[in-house]
Every structure is written in structure tokens, then in C-alpha cells.
Length: 199
Image (cartoon, rainbow, N blue to C red):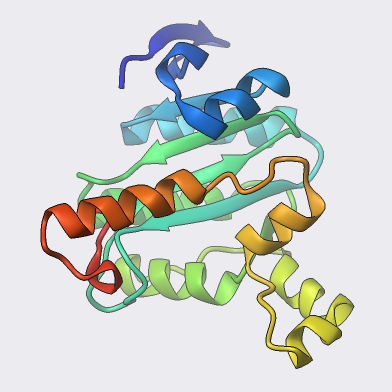
């Protein structure tokens, strides 16, 4: 993906332009004037994390992206930090070694912001196994959803992040294109959809 680069507050980062997006994500990005930033190296990530910690007084949202759901076999591919309603940062850790990933988790854990996650057990387990450090968090929206929407739990309806986002945000079914891609990729490459890996 081609990005344009910008120096913001002494930090050189790649800002993903709307022209480089497609489908529903492109429409959402444009309609809500969102800004997605991608960082690929640890020093830049640490500087940006420090800047967020020093300049953003509200809570932030953390989510990790992984190659799959198996904590012991899959790998952490990246960390997403949402630091305002319209700004988010993706730290691409795909080719990082264990020590760099550990230093990243340590930097996140030292932030002064309150940290919100959804299903913190998964994220913390993943970073714990891979780096020896669990991510710090203050609130887990999955626990909150479990308490608020017990009727969904009893009816065995999902309280996953995608489902709650579809219900409570204007973004709609933003991941359907990804689901369709996984099915097409799996069929084309003769891989079971259940065995598809993002790596």
C-alpha cells in the first residue's frame, strides 16, 4: 500500500490516504474524515506512544491483530491504538523480533492514559505468551457488554466487537468484504476457511 509521509511533531509517519483504500472502509474513511497512521519500526512507535501519552488526556483503545486465534501457534502482527474518535495508529509488528515486541508492549503499558480493550483476555494472553508481558488495561468492553446485554448472552448471540460495532456505530458491516476475501482466497488456494491465516 502506498502512503504519503508526513512529519508531525517531529515524528515521521505514514498516513494512509483515502485513495489507497477500497470498498466500505474507503467510504467510512471519507464520510467520517478518519485518519489512519501506519508505523513499521520500534523507535517511531515509541515516540508516537510517548506523544499520545503526553498530549491525549482521554482514554485510548488498544487492539492487537494476530495471524490467527491460537495463542501458542499464531503470531502478533500488529497493534492498533485509537487515540481520538477519528484518529488511529497501526503499528505493524509483522517482521519484528520478540525483544522489539516486548519493548513495544512495555511502552504501551507505561502510558498515562486509561486503556480500553474488548476481550482483554485474548490480547493479554497473546502478548503474554509471545513477549512475556501482558498488556495493561483499565476497561474491557466485552465484560461491560456481558453485564449490559445478558439477554444476548442467554440467547447465545455474539457480544464480539464486530457485532457490537454493527449494532451501535454507524459503520455497518465493515468487515463483510474481508469475510468475502477470505472465502475467495481459501477456495482459490484450496485452504479451509477455518485454517486461513492472516500471515
